[in-house]
Image (cartoon, rainbow, N blue to C red; front, side, top):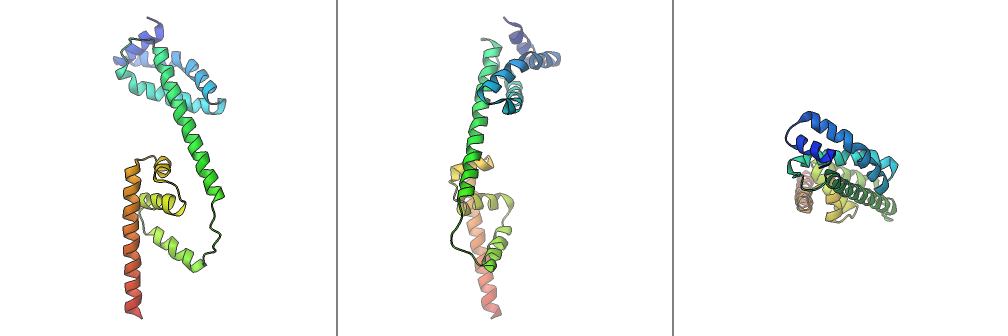
Length: 178
């Protein structure tokens, strides 16, 4: 059994010195692999995230295989997650830059919309704006907000109900006042 695997098993069993040694032994190889899969700028964050994930998963490491293989598998998945996130973010920014409504909106209408949106709680407002104003799919919005698609659907539905209630109440007040 190689030294990294031995140290990983000891760390798994609660030896804090072994945990520090595990990170020390693994850090350089993990960083190099992450730099190869991503780039040197992203490698620091990817390596750190890999080690965090590995430490969190040590309880499940059985030592049947080489710890370095196990660790680099985690690094590969971590880098894939980071790359997917970067692509998704780039795609979102590209879509946001390319979208504009050619129909001008009167300043008073913009203010009304802003006031309506301000009446929503933050999570509902974010979900509503991403899907209904910016046109992202529920899946894309879930990725941006880092939550489940069902959560986005629920937040948008509740935001719609709230906005309808506010508009009806405003219309009622205007009708009574006139």
